[in-house]
Length: 344
Image (cartoon, rainbow, N blue to C red; front, side, top):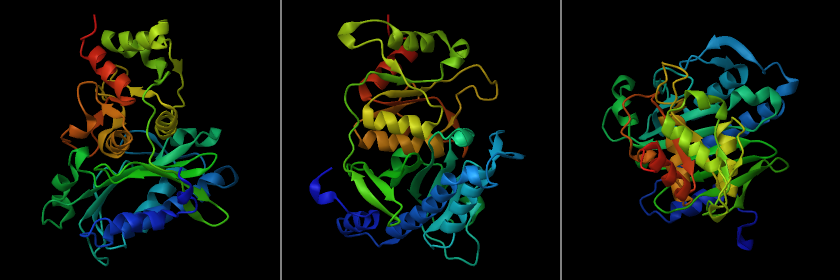
């Protein structure tokens, strides 16, 4: 981080970026500022989750057929309630909601769309593992205003995101985001004493070389032979290519990705045969893979579904699932070769 960057707040940074775009109206800055407020509220509750009656399952199951945690519900409600009144959104999409979320008629609508995972890694809440909020922002393409007609506007390839990033709630709370198009990736750390996110990681670049792979090897028996060969490659001994790699897997996507972004590495969640209902993998294209793929790209990395760029996938449904290989470009491109059966 440059010495001149010390003390720069996220708001200052957003305004500086806005001034660089003569066509900017301030609507986007307003949108992100309100999202930051939501993250501060979530961060506060995450930090005291062990002390409050907000921990554990609600007994309900979400659209992904997963047990919903109480803190999931809280985080989802906070984002929706904070974002719906600002006048910049035409609709929202959340991992926790089966359908698009409309903006109440009492509030004005705008031309932006936000899709988000309100609390990624929530199954790790009660063991103090880092969890986070992932988001992607798009601009509406049509003149539609009815929420039932906006799905086509939402289902845009990830390359169309005008911003993406995540908040990670760990030993400290951080926001990492990019506005794409070569603007870089920047990280801000929440200083509780002043209640502000201050620039702490300027122009993040993922290290070109790595020695780390992140994958749930408990699913090994459910992978195809090409996927097994890829993991075996990372574990095999070859001093010329610094193998074997070290295994680092938390099981919280935002935590695994954040570590690899800063330290270098590849995160993988391959397709498997474990659940016949999810033959293409577990992770969600719109609310998980696309936002992190844009961050990776802007940081010099790469994200693939094993056959091509995540950012070029034309989504067909809001809760579409994809395999994900993300991190160092060299390692992800090697993964594509293995998955495609192009390694002898």
